[in-house]
Length: 170
Image (cartoon, rainbow, N blue to C red; front, side, top):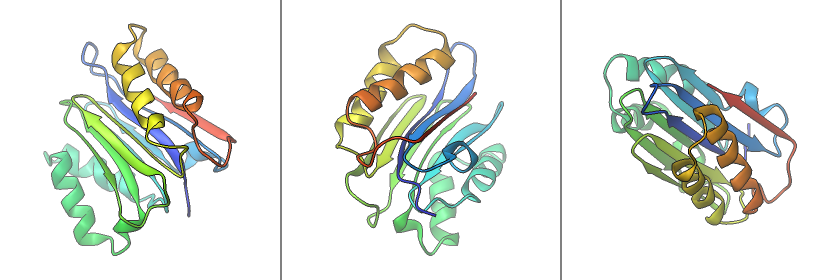
């Protein structure tokens, strides 16, 4: 299923909370994209979303895999990986964003300690940049920082097809 969207997965370094904020033109995006498990990690799967990525990625993180290790496992098991996009953060704050070469433009992401922002079919790179900058700059409680980042992504152009659905998982 095509899930063109933008998302932020993150970890709060003060509390260890994990979360995903996501918005899209795709209806009921919260039923497909966000996954999180306390003490393990958070993951967002989008762009021809593979809903198995959530449970599989979290299981690998729980077994001690790094985000890069999760990507390599997906590479071995998913023949359509180049159509997919995902971001993840571990409970230790390690992060990764992946955008396959066959994702619809604009598609890309940015990751740093404790967060990964990504999107596809966006107005441009300014969407994920605004999300990351806002998340890192704001001093609000963690769930509010996720929502402020999502709002910043929308204000920077968001999903170029419009908006229909959003979700927050902490």
